[in-house]
Each structure stands twice: as structure tokens, then as C-alpha cells.
Length: 152
Image (cartoon, rainbow, N blue to C red; front, side, top):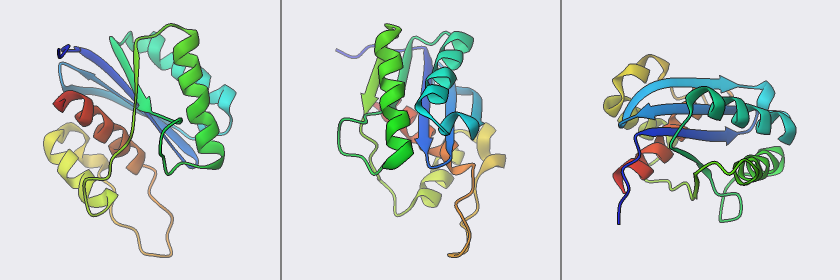
């Protein structure tokens, strides 16, 4: 049985950043990124709590820290804290495994920007090999999890 969720909040964590995207009826309505919230599990929980209070979602989605994941270190500890916050607050949630269905995250971001044109101005450019990853990639990581939930 498939349940159609109208208000969806997706939170993604990466090294040095955490982001949320909010969708209503499959349409992207808001997105937010924080570097400070990624610094500790306590700050990550606070980010999740504030985002859930602000948007009042029907379902919150984040990556499953208990399953196979490429996250490590602080990012993984923040993911554990997010999952625990969802359980403690009795928020309807779904922990999913993030799949890599594209050659790289920049190709995936281009495909997602076509599906959600409102976020196209934040499309990250592929960095030179010696440059660090653009901050905006985290939005597209969250969107990819949203698409996985919406398309199921």
C-alpha cells in the first residue's frame, strides 16, 4: 500500500554541512543549509527539531545511519543524532539508504535541477580536482532522497 505524503522534509548530512529541503505535493518549496549544525550531534538535533517545528511535515526523511553508508566520523554521529531525535520526538519518519544512480553527484544534480527548476541557480559546478566540494551539493543530496521517496 502506498501512502501519498503531502508535506515532506528531507535532511541530508555531509562533511561540514547539513541541509533540509521541504516539498509540498512533490513541489520544492524551501531549502536551507547550515554549517554550524554539522559541528556536533547536539547542534544537528537542534537543526532537525527547528526544521520540523517550522515546516510541520507529514514525513521526515534522512539517511539511515544503521545501514550501509559512505558517511564517517562527525557526519555519521550527526546522522545517529538525527535518527534519535526523530524517535524521541515521535515524528513520522523514514530512514533510507542513499543510492548512487548516476556517474557522479554533479550529473545527478543536473538531472535534479531539471526536475526542480526553482533550485537550478544553486546547481554546483564540477570543481577542479584540487578544489573542495561546493556547499550547494548538499541540497541535491537531500533532493535525491526526496525523489526516491516520491517515486516509490
